[in-house]
Length: 379
Figure 1 (tube, helix red, strand yellow):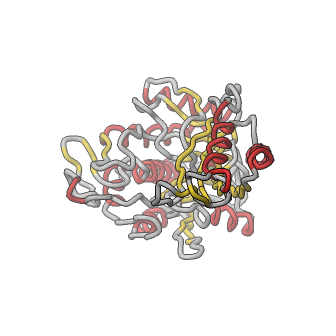
Figure 2 (cartoon, rainbow, N blue to C red; figure 1 turned 180 degrees about the vertical axis):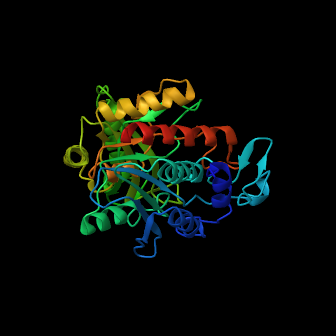
Figure 3 (cartoon, helix red, strand yellow; figure 1 turned 135 degrees about the horizontal axis):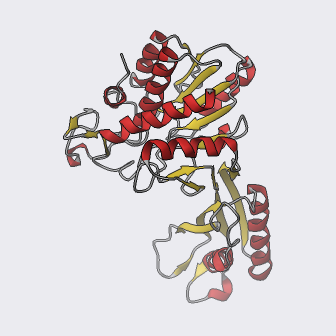
């Protein structure tokens, strides 16, 4: 009997696993994988649920899958056409939170793995690493699993993340890397005063605007071989001043940078602080800059692994995938330090939206892609 990825995805959607709640999703997968001969171990950390599952001998040549069962909040339930945790299939469409991001991806690779080891047991091992913390802070999800794997001597030779990667049509894009992401939190401290007597004050907003203008005046780069140009985006400016005749003492701004492999977060932090020092010298306004790094840029260079996955995608979908590094971040940013990692999954048009949904045919074909990848990799 084959494992139906649509039915499994629907069951997972019915688990209300909004980050960081497990919601029964990992327990469901543990039961299904365990029944198929996978050794399943919960690797929870700091209240975050995680699952490690392995079929085959430890230390053998190992293909890994990675994904997450946590989902973002549903928002206004009344705005949904169908119960966001109903997992309803209507006219060939699966509805619910996680229908694209990414309970369907998890269901597809779990179903592919279960049937593959049952029907054609490979000479090697298959590992599934599934977290409940991808949509959250990410500190105790996939990172916790990888820390545990290192301590236990568990390894993956390669890994495929089942995130939705396709913009328009199943098969049109796979990810071979991701841009880095970091945020500057900037505080400018001046001297409060009367707006009519600016010479007696030191306006932090003027200095802050100058700094922000310099951060965004010129592009950081013009792109690299596999990456688009880096971007600098001001996301908020605030001083909390209710009065129109008072120069405030402090002002704050937040700047997000998505950067390619021409930079590191450390280099960009030095760049931002050097600009701030220059504006301080000119204005006397003092800046405090702190940074938060979500991940460094990385790439899995085109080669045998990317070729194998691309061939499998084209064979099952009829579409040759673009090798891309676009989009935000994913847990691949953690896995890249462990082994070569790629991403391929569904069309992600409705992820995080009200009425998140996906055609059931996509889920079935995604399982076929993952099955072909396993067959070709172990051939």
